[in-house]
Figure 1 (cartoon, rainbow, N blue to C red):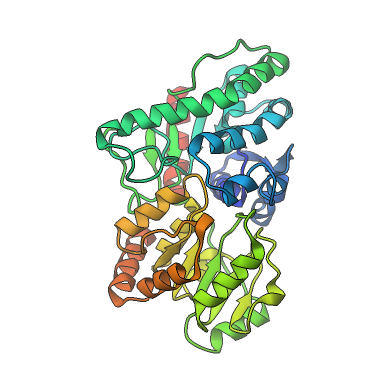
Figure 2: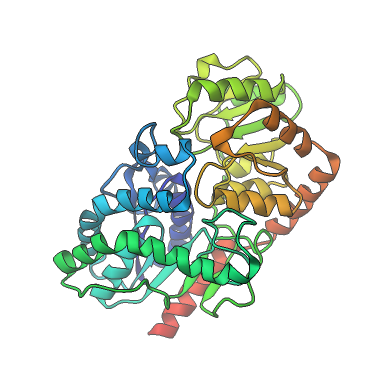
Length: 412
């Protein structure tokens, strides 16, 4: 089969889809991935055919920019939804054209992230089946509230309703631009309501988030979508640092930016309290020259390779990083900033492999130091190791490929 895979977001959104494309290619299918150009490094490394969509997600996360204000501020979900929609809406027309052009002759589309509504529309235009690919549980359930809402704040009896309300709010923020592009590019009639009946594949661990019993049959929890590091060789300075002492603490906030960089350096230095630290600056723009000698600064490094060599992982709570830390069998310290990061922080704390989350928008050295101490407890380490062993038995990509083939065969 020839599959067009569409997503838009940060590295954490693109990397799992690149891994899925590689797995589909290895099963004999042809894939082409469309995503933000700055996030396509993982696709290139895996030999996945890919092209960039219009826009610049990295610029949108910088201080003072659209999403940067969400990361650094104290905003409610409505503001986050509007910020996400403003990024997508500015490029929706271009995306609709780019996805339409790239999908000529394809047998199906797989859609995810901020470009999902565009992908769903193009599948309708092409008259081919469409599958959703999610890293966040968006299918309504009574088991937990929408992952975009603060954990524990929604009464249990409103859980299912909260999903419908949030999904509807997102659609309303995207609807005008989506319908305009549907008409102008594809000649399609406007849609009133959000799509709800297409199959959903989730690159989520059933050990981290068991599949809700009230989900429909076409929603599948596959396991994490990750490409193995293989024979990756670390740079000399990292290899030397790891060999020079006990397993270090890992600190990295991935694509998060928009916060006070000077304050972040001060907080991390004080909280580490002399511990050995491997630090990944990511998109933060932190001046690493200000860090003390107990910090080893690294560039992009395979999580499964590095986290297994760490004592604990301090991270922002993105779905991919959370999964990788848990799979490595080490405790987490989650510092969420926005969106679903609070949801994943709540999940790992409930499993006893992380302390209560520390809000990244109000990060203080004392709280972070206490959280690191919690992650160093023997009982927390034991629970993290057990969870890692269970997750290590999952076959997320193989399950996803089987489901794609089954669902499309069923359609045809």
